[in-house]
Length: 162
Image 1 (cartoon, rainbow, N blue to C red):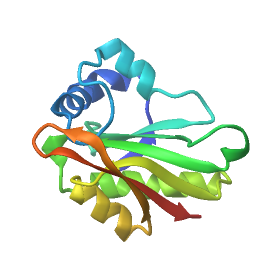
Image 2: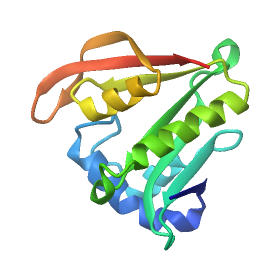
Image 3: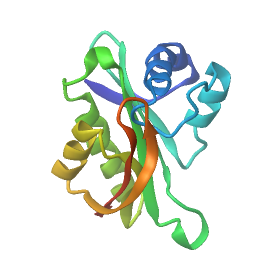
């Protein structure tokens, strides 16, 4: 698996699984009806932020990550990231590779920490992955997320010092 900078030419490969994940409404706080053009604008962040894709040896997109400053101004020393893995490639280490890559990006870019603002507590695979990479739950917003099957569940704030 190779992780490389995403280009606009990658969007047609990203959009189907991006849309599937968002429309399911189980893991991210994006609008469920987010359209293709608006979604691309939300995902493709301007430098010095980054968007990358994980691709297989044939060049097929397996997943993507958006890496950015968590806050502006005096909070701009903390990074954040969002990950999407094509469900067809779930469980194959794509998420771990993207998360590991983003932590290294943040570290080499001079960030002092990484923070995830809204990790849905029922997304246990993501929580376990992040914890295995050194992130800690530092707080939970009770009932901060309306899960389509579980009802109102918590949103974790997760942190890792770099």
